[in-house]
Length: 345
Image 1 (tube, rainbow, N blue to C red):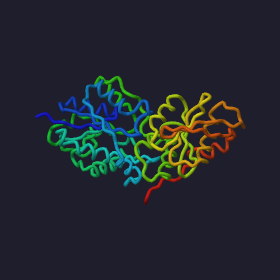
Image 2 (image 1 turned 90 degrees about the horizontal axis):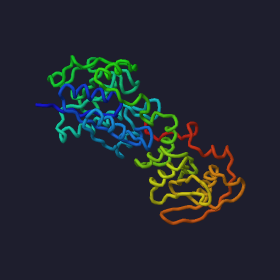
Image 3 (image 1 turned 180 degrees about the horizontal axis):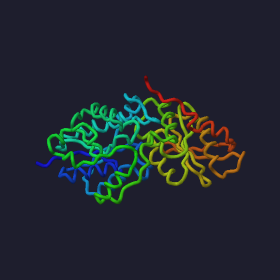
Image 4 (image 1 turned 60 degrees about the vertical axis):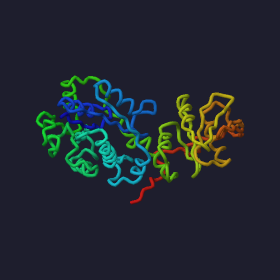
C-alpha cells in the first residue's frame, strides 16, 4: 500500500529537498502552499507563483490555500508571542499545520512533512519550539521533518517503516553547505536563493501593520494587502492616504479600492494617485491633496484643482501646494512614529 504525505511547501530549497527525499522513498507527496499578504517578495511575485513554479519543475503535485481572517485573529494575539518584529513564527507554523491536518482525511494522507531544520531559525526551529509546534498542531508522531529527523524523536512513519530513517540526512544549524551538497546529489540545481521570507519581520513593513492594528479594530485581508503598495500617511484617526509610486502601484491601488473610499489625482498633469481610506472629512481630503501635490511638478504655493472620485462620482477640490518636508514627514507612517500594536497581554 503506497503511503501519502502532505508537505508544507514554500518553494524554497529546504521544502524542495524535504519533499524529494520522501518522494524518493516511494511516498506519494502533495505539496501544500499557504498564501497570505505577508508571504512573498512583492505583490507581483507572490509566494504561490514561486512555490507553484518549483513544484512543477520537480514534479511535485501542488495545492495552494489562501489564509483568511482567522489567521489575522491569530496574528493580533499569538499565544507564543512575536519574533524580532511582528512575526508570530511558532503560532503561524502551528496554524498552518492544524489546517493541513484537517485535509488529511479528505486527501487520504498518512502524515505531514516540513522542510524545517534544527537551529536554522532562532524562534520556531529550536528543538523545544519544534516540539511545541507538533503538540499545538495535534500531530504528535505524525509530523516528520526529514532534513533533521535523525536529531529528533522517531515518528510513526519511521517506526512503521513507511520512511527509512537511516536514509534521511542529518542537517542542523544556519549554514547551507549540507543542503547544497544534498541538492547536487538529488539533481536539484534550480531553486530560489535564501532571503525574502515573511514581511512581518521586515522593518519597513512593521510600522504599517502596527498603525493598521492601532486604528482599525477589525482589519481584513485586503487591508493588509494594501500595506504592500505605495507610501503611507496617517492623516487622521479615521483615515489614511496611500500614494502610488509608479503606474503599476497606481493600477494596484485602483484594483484594491473598497466602497466608500476616495481616489485623488491631478487630472491636468503627470500624477500619482492617492487612495484615501476610511471616512475622510473635507479637511482630510485637503490634507491628502497637499500630500499628493508634493509628488507632482505643480508649481509651489499655487492652488491646484484636483479630482476626487468616490463610488463613481467625481468632484473637484481646490488645494494649495504648500506642504513642507517636515510636515510631510509628520504624517508618514514610519518606524519611529508607529503606534504600538493593540494586543491584550
